[in-house]
Image 1 (cartoon, helix red, strand yellow):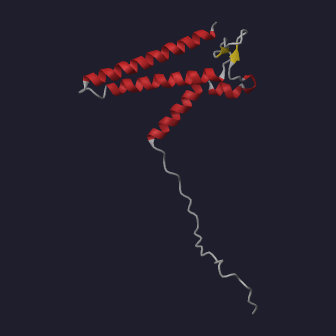
Image 2 (cartoon, rainbow, N blue to C red):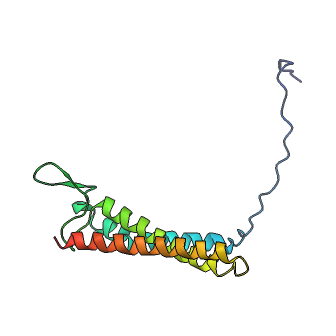
Image 3 (cartoon, helix red, strand yellow):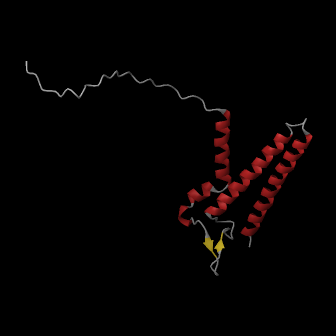
Length: 141
């Protein structure tokens, strides 16, 4: 038998290989599903699908003839990316306003806090509605 020289400071690793087990992933929680659904809905309502379909006419922003920034495309047929993001953010703000209004009904025994939540939620919802209407009005100019 031939012995091969092997350096003493290098040790052969002792490995125990086990068979991998394939398990079904766990069901995501309800809040995770709700958050993912909300993000998808805001993406669709903000014009994300339109941005994907019409990639060739996609621009982030425009400019006026005097060199100023144009954030809202003046036609209903097209939109800028910034316009879609702003619409999504305003829709999200309105949804948060609705959640705050709902939370105000949960604090019946603390009327001052409930009124504060109600006014804050209505203010956020109203501001979101007004700003979305202003954006829509800019499309007709």
